[in-house]
Image 1 (cartoon, rainbow, N blue to C red):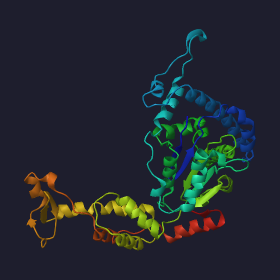
Image 2: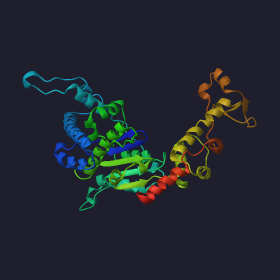
Image 3: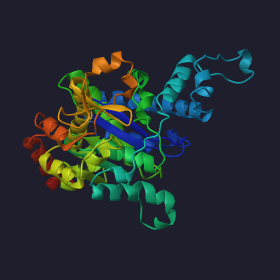
Image 4: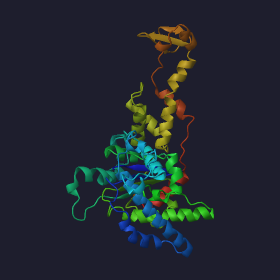
Length: 406
């Protein structure tokens, strides 16, 4: 198998680009992994419980590997057939079947794979040159130019993208998946329910979970964090084609042990002037408009402090302005057989409304006007940025202490 995955818990997510196949023997690493995870836990009772669970994780992970190695993962293929439980033949004769629990797991894993590939190119990502360069070194170059990585030169294996909400962290991850021709795992109810019902999943998907104040949840979070530390310590050693790409809005919530596992910690800031100008063009796409280069520059200046998400919401609102004009219009002009809203003073203006045109059977001949700079000014007058100065100060302080500019 060759899958990339991204998984979300609340506002935190983890993107994982796995190797072309499962390790041939997961249990072969259990001794070193066991020693590693035990040193992070001091409570004897918890240590004993973790040890038991850890051994169970390994056993179940081996079962999953065998299941996935047995057949395809097409939406209508073997995984679908796996939903029909098989039983063992008496006397051990014939092919050994898969028990219902394993069949459910196999079918659930298959349904969690998004077949639609992301279609976000590097050119669609505005700014963030440092982040794009580092990710290209880790993802693209090793595939296209493997001869570059000889001797001690190895690609980066673990990235942490941090920054305020809506700055494009997930957008960068989609661009990586597109350039690498990769597939994402999506969160499904199956995975979310089974994650804590079956410990085996922890060896397949890494999760960053917020620590709750409840004692029982703290203990569960510690166990998950311990397993995460163990798994991430092995990334880049045995799994040569594994890339871990994580994103967070709260970098200080990560403790030192987890933070240290990321080779590159890249700050994804608010877009600069040129980036905002590019974003307006990308989000407008081929929608009819009459904006000039000067207009786009004007919009970029007016949106200082806006995140990429804020600009996306702004453009989405602006896209409906021509529709609103059409609904409220009292005058239309017939241009090449299409009825377009216009001012009363415009040449050829006809006093008529949208319902009246519809009543005359001309609904398919009504066309909204192109987007104008005035439409943007109207929307921006009522929209405010969602990222506060306090949020920015937190991320800038973290960058000075532990990260680097993206």
